Amino acid sequence: RYTRSLTRVGSLLSIAFCFLISLVSVLTKNDLPTTFLLTLGVGFCALFDSVNAAAGWILADGLENMLKKGAVVRRFDSIGDICACDSIMCNNDEAFPVKGMRVESAFTGFHRYSVTRENKDRIGKLLVYALACSDVKKEYATEKEKKKRKLRFIGNKVDVALARACRELDISLDAVTEKLFRIEGEYNPAGELERVLVLNEGKSFVIVKGAPEYVLRRCDDYVQSGQNFPFAENSRNRFLDEAGDMADRSQHVFAVAIKYVESDTLSALDTKDGWTFVGLVGLHTSIELNAASAVYRCNAANIDTVVFSRSPYHTAVSLAKDSGIIKSEAEAMTMDSIYETEHGLYVADNMNYHLFIGIT
Image (cartoon, rainbow, N blue to C red):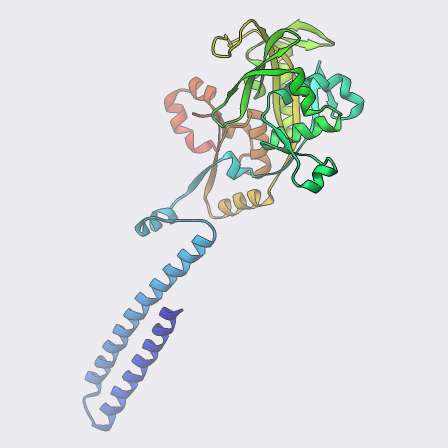
């Protein structure tokens, strides 16, 4: 504000000084061309200083707006390079900020069921295993809520949504932890509980919860009507197709599998195969509208949006399509795809990939 006022005053004084010189030249009958050149030089110097002052004010105003929106630039001389940027990369949480989650469906025994009390007998074991492989906790927010026995759950959004769904089916968190005594847990790089070793009725087994494509690859059989059946290739593909269909309905999908062991620690276990597939759980996900509008504004400015995601493949692809980041699965790249693609071809087509899933 001070710079803008000073610039305005300086410009007005310079104009007044130029008129004064011209008036004195006319009254004293001096050489008019010489006087004109002199006033023109004074005006140019004043204009040059004003432009510099205006540029400084514009830069300060721009930095103020950047700080209000959470952007920080350490080096001012890099602003030009930033303005010339034609792509931006962000992680899953920034690209798909989750507004809410709720458990909507469960798939087990080649059937998909809605999460209702009527289907508790069919999907109860699947949800219990999934809840046992979580770090969700419960607490009373206030003394008033404690008197009313109004609980709330604490944990990541997936585990909290799972605990709420189980509560609606009269499956309490305390009953699950008492029935399935946890011996040890293992976390993934994102800090989420991925595997747990539990003890139930004198038998120990491991529960794994993760991306369907990751879990199904390690399963040898699946559960149907209380019995185990060996996996055939078509049945494995049937489960993967189901996971893709659930993800297309704006659902976060994860798979649950178990493996009976004779060990008291996870570090001594062979986890490559031998798992029994229990089922899939689908959580309806609603994302912030600002995410899609931000992608639209970037596209309007000819800036490509690239996302790095740790979510399951089908979930990441579905959310990326909903947000406008990709139009088809051909624009998604996974770690397996990188290994299978020739290096030169990958480099040549790299600009066509806008979603990288599980790349480490």
